Image (cartoon, rainbow, N blue to C red):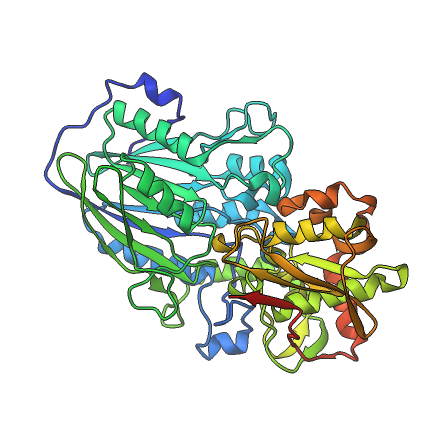
Length: 534
């Protein structure tokens, strides 16, 4: 396949670039999103799968199975008209990434034969330097158009906004877009500037169209609802392959957020297929798109493939993974306690309502500093990355729940600032934003039907066994994580608070110590500290 790399500005120079008209053209698009370095299989609740359960056929995904299903599926398309895409967030979320950083991602993805990979917000978690290493090691283009890297010495000139690939004699334009709030939820640094997604994609798609490319895919990491907004606003985008919201779209799977594909009518009255394939390599998206002579989509059919135990993992990949796992298995397998039941840390819960993992982590944070006069703990739901199944709790599981190497942080805020912080936390629930506040030493209610900024009510602060309404004029000592304390996830009030201290113990150590303090046995619970008003 001949490939041509083009930035959004470079596309305008190619007005003479055209493709002869052919009969209807069908392209089979295979895709994943939000892989989060989950190289090992996962359980049905997205926690780590142990070898015994995996052997019993109770687990899903894993890089070895993903390699098998990709190879087998692409082999079915005898005409070769297939495309393998990732919609971003391949960093962060497992001990493999914690230990080996971007190298483990590029090594496996190079071997899997990805054609194009989008930039996710988590690709910036370790700053532009680590993202640069990923770009330089990748044997595939990594795209992301709605951010300017010209002022960053690590990324300048190393990432493009769009990419044109030739398949079956047809030129396919692929545009990248990354969530605009990346500076709030990751660490791109001061020299990477993000811009409006719709404005950027409009210009990039017009440039592709002017260059004679009439088959355009948006490979996005902006979330399902924003994908639908983009599809409804722009006439030249034919297909959207998305990520960021970890959304399962399916015509058969129970609990799917919508059909696969979800069809959205654009300004020209044409229906645009939007697809996404859940998370962690549990599903492989598989959509067949047919264009007519004029580059108009006439058919979009498919269904994501659940990668269960019926898929036999690639032996070479399994062997490579075993070698990588050996140095970390012994330390990570240390048992720190037990849980009497599953501890729910799913994003579907922890970014919307009080969740068991949120209570555990917030309780642990508050317990660590309560003797310092701290009375309130606030932890972002997006910082909780996994559930823990009933039974033994290992060091590895704790780090999988809290993979970001955050430290415990404290800051003094007024009661009014606490309320403002809570308003920020519930301001983007509709899009599953990770800023949702899990709390301890605090109770609050929110009304989703109210506009953002006016949702919080009934804020109560605990004192022993009693509760009292928060005093907006009083000063409260807050414990959080260093990422939020620095203003991450939109918590600007934390960045402006008094007496900040970001250098406490690692959050995963705080959690492990708290479980040990319970006598080694923990029973998960919720107690109504967060109330949703319908």
